[in-house]
Length: 140
Image (cartoon, rainbow, N blue to C red):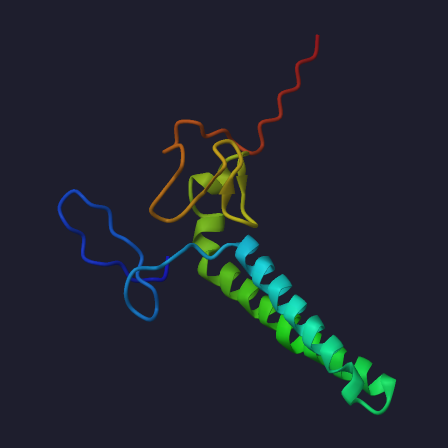
C-alpha cells in the first residue's frame, strides 16, 4: 500500500509499512478523510464563533472565518483526497475487485461482504466475483 513491504516470514503475509517506519496503523479511506474534514470544520467554527467579538467590523470576521474554513478544513481534505487517489490508483483500477460489480472504488469497499479491500486482502478471495457489465436481456 505504501510502496514497501516488510520482510516476509514463513507462513505470514507481508504487511504494509508506513512512510515513517513501522506497521501502517489503518487503511486511509474516503470516510476517514471526510471525518477529519468535518472535525476540523467543527473546531474552526467553534473558534471563529468564540473570537467573533474581537473583530471591529463584522465583515472582517466573515472574511477571516471563510479563509480559515478553506485553509483548515477544505484544502487539507482536497490534498488528502488527491493523495488517496494517487496511492490507491492500482487498487482502484487494476485488481480483480476493480472489475466486480460489488466494489465501490471511491472508498475501497466491497458492498457484498461489507469489508474494505486492500492490496494484501480480497474479502471474498475471488469466489463471489461478478463482472460489472453483466447486462442480461432476456427477450421472449
